[in-house]
Image (cartoon, rainbow, N blue to C red):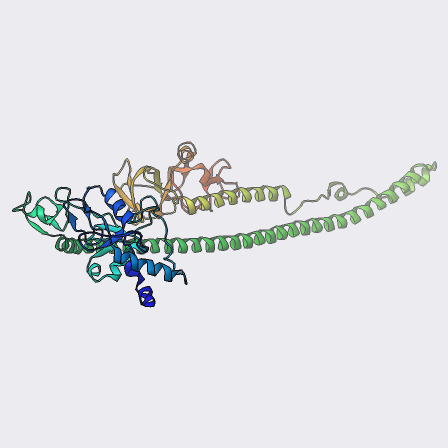
Length: 485
């Protein structure tokens, strides 16, 4: 019998302290508890009602707590039997933290509740929840995730209905009271309807999220492709400049070798002239010595008889002056190299500026059409290369610009360049008029023309100018003027 009692010992646990009842008492509904547990439970009930913690039956007044003698004897037998072996330990649980729902039946340390019972209107930790799984009557109760169970403040009943007229939760008593005649449904029905709406909202959010994820993916893919393109551009630039440096080094070596070869040719020419002049000098010195001896003779007859045989200087020897006239003037070479260097620097700066001019164009910037653009994609209209306007909007690859000559002019962003204060200064201060046969008073930038030497064009003064050959597109337009003029 003791073994049987031990196997069923859980049915003798107090549903408040979840241990074997100590000084068991039975209340009018038939449930039994520890005397101290039930008294403590009733004392802390804010409603000041005496009700059963399990079946929730209310009592008009606090019942008398009489000891259940038979149950006390059974419990004593169970305790004596338990001394021979330790009962299983209850599962480890954690105390409730701030913001968490507390178990309504824990007396000392409030453990965290895991479920709430809508019938009992109480929250239970794992230990105090066990009777809801063990007793058939309690198994019928509806358990939900641990939460504070709200009740009607007027009728102290569960909020099982919803008033669509006032858009609030109400209890069943409210339907027959202040909400009588209103459009009311059960809270479950209202939840089902609103759940459909919320599901639609969720689907919309999912679509928006997926679209944003796609946009993010495209953005990152574009950035990755842009970075790869930039890396390729860096590699191509390094390779191109490396080859360019090698080419310049080769050109430098070639120019140096040709200069030295020219110097060697000039040295050989000088050597030939030197040998010839030294021979002529030696012959003249011999003739001088012969003359000196002849002039010292005292015999007048001998002097006169041999006078005609004395050598006389020729006119060719006196007029023939041999000088070194180099085929190449190295001072001219230095000037040409310096000029080449300046042109290369200008060309390099213009090219780099051209490549990056539109990288930072934004709304409000002053821009113009690049000088390298012959015909803009959206046509010129009254706009020229010298027209300067303000960007009003940018959309992908197109730009809208307000020019003095034309408002809301449309163009490609890649065809535009920013205009800085330095650009304005160059436009206003570095222009000049050139008279050429095809066009009088032709207007151009001084940086785009160069002095024409007399050898460039017969009859052309060295002070006149011609358009440089390395300028492919000029800022003031060609007109009838060509690069060779």
